[in-house]
Length: 271
Ligand code: IPD
Ligand code: CA
Ligand code: CA
Image (cartoon, rainbow, N blue to C red; front, side):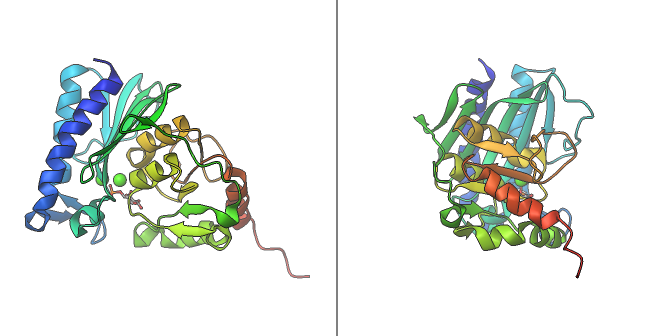
């Protein structure tokens, strides 16, 4: 079984498990991770261990990087074979019953380059898959990003994240918020990135994400014809220690970069 087939198999199994748990979400054990706005449920932990165990059975020597259970260390140099996992992206939505806005995200990364990826949305059982140079699909149907390039008519997915990131978000995104035609905040990077890949939005921007939040979504958007970069336009590398990302249909990318860089320029000196 190749890596993409394994991703699909795992996502189908784990998605069924998470869907069943979603039905009984009010009875789950919930902990605060880094404060009241960063929650962890028993389902995040159990789903991650199901995924990790299944990968280890097929590829026992591969590196696994995942959000929970101490597997969240970024490597100094990208491992030759590594898996990047978010067992539930959008835990807040999962707990509050906001579906389908939470997802399971798995990427396979070879020497730092994402080469296969999948995202599953448990409630709808939608499955997004991509393999480098082979395109992206939703439920086997090919995906293509939107061709729209006019920012004033574009839908931009933003995310305000946790309170500690709000100031940076307002500073970086202030101009984007004024310039975009429509704004939307999903509360799940993976779900928002699938929307870009499926031409339901033109771009997604976030000031502080970890690799497991966007690795799979990045490849799915790129294989649907989109573009990914850091907020300064530099290439998006998973383990470079930076956190801001801009992932778009390509057509609105440079306009958005212009607004993001304008936000970083110092105000002109008074005359
Ligand atoms: C979060 C979601 C959210 C983003 C946060 C992430 P989690 O992931 O993707 O949209 O704003 O920065 O941490 O905690 O639900 O896996
Ligand atoms: Ca996440
Ligand atoms: Ca998570």
